[in-house]
Image 1 (cartoon, rainbow, N blue to C red):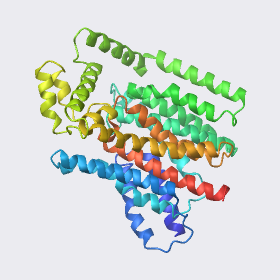
Image 2 (tube, rainbow, N blue to C red):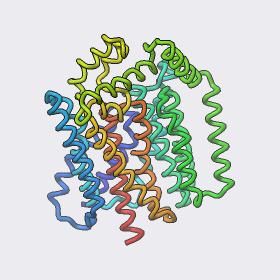
Image 3 (cartoon, one colour):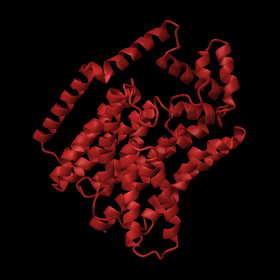
Image 4 (cartoon, rainbow, N blue to C red):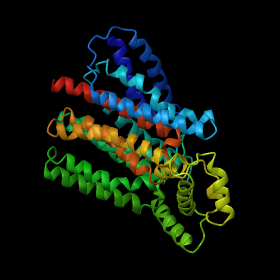
Length: 410
């Protein structure tokens, strides 16, 4: 079991490290882990963690979300291809229970993976923008998903920095600091504006959580460095940030004057359509396919732009859930966000002075935290990478957190 344990946790590290830099970098490790989970269940439960109510709660919420989405697909005409993405919420659970049986190596492999993923995302972004000449970095994904995922990896590298700083592993602490800036810079080069909103809010939270770890001089130096970095990337025309911000302001002005055929304008019209859909079917919604006729009618009436009726989602996770799946769907979505967030944040509070455990809880909490921000301008769960980079990092860090509790508390 030792060999299997090392292989499994190395695959988790690879999942986090390769998701943006290698095509299939997240799907192949996840598939191997899923297959390995059946092998582990055939083995004797030696050294397995005792499952708790919190483990079951996380499993129930994920499986409940998957089953609810299956129900909505049934109501929407049973287009089975739409089962693929929500099924990940269910298929990740054998992997979760496998990791709760496999004690990880003492090496912080997950933090190695997060920092490598953030740094490699910047490499991909620089290659796309300045070698290929693309207007927005995107790797093998679309620019929004690439930028938001890179931003999340950058934030999670803050937790890695806390861990390595506490351990006085200075080379890895410096690498983690580089990873923070790399993930954020990659997001900027992608031009994905929705993820930028999260930077000051989550950054402030991370500073507050680490106030007892870093001394004031170091925190001030970090703030100064971050400020210089942000001013530099915004002021440099080659990054494209000024153009993206200016374009958003121009789009809003055009929308106010009646021109909605812009990136922002189409989003506004998609969001407006959600409320019409919710009014038609407030409980279970109209469905992705069932809503097309209504959205086309709204376009014919001039209430939304015809192009806004053609999208498969509404570029807002909350309003997509409300319009397509009604109030029930919105509640399921919020449970999928808030329950993991609550579980991790409870550990952040419980171990506020234990820096062997707390960074794992912070890293796990950052996943739903970031997604709740990204969801304002993108339907993350409508994309394969969006689902995979939600469920698997959560189960990785939840299992790692539980093992850290066993090592340092029990």
